[in-house]
Length: 265
Ligand code: NI
Image (cartoon, rainbow, N blue to C red):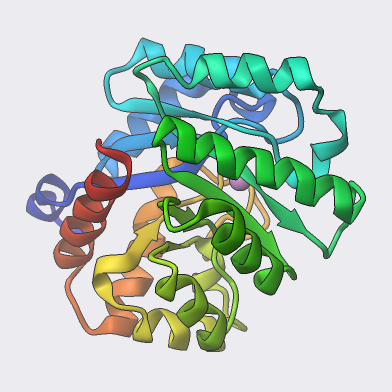
């Protein structure tokens, strides 16, 4: 990429866990590299692993005007969440730096928490999203139908949100698009074997697409298998540009606009 290109592209990493331990020693360089790659906003997503990733993410976001936070709890850890925790998380949503509820959702692949516990917590976060009018960041692994069903029945047409790290087929995509949701693509879309997912990305309307890293997980090619970081969202956007036959600038502009529409940033 030449210099002019670097300057004109402005991307958003809509899903990164950069408050995680993995980044503690070099967060400043991580942020600098993100800037260098044209990333001008990062949504620091709470709730992966520990409840404390929520206030850690918020604290990090408070340090820089271009960082934002979310509050939630990953379905893996659903069984850890008490009533007091939910009250505390709801209080955190009042902070102007908090732009979404999540991550939340259902993971029937790993099933680290029992399905019923996951469902109950997901419903609580759907309600929180409706009450706070903050969009929902949804994790869905092997649970497309139930995720859609619960959003429909509990959200009563009030839920706005995104299926993060979307990996379903186009039938799944259509169900979520019909619910008015956005689909966010991660580094998985760059993997050699992900031809089917690239085909889905090609068909999803541009005004519903977001890009993310899910750092530190799911580093895109050619960094696959190593620690992911927000700068690499550019590689995700480049792949989407390729499959859609559009320029990187176009993808950056539209996904930034979608981010503004959904998250208000
Ligand atoms: Ni995540």
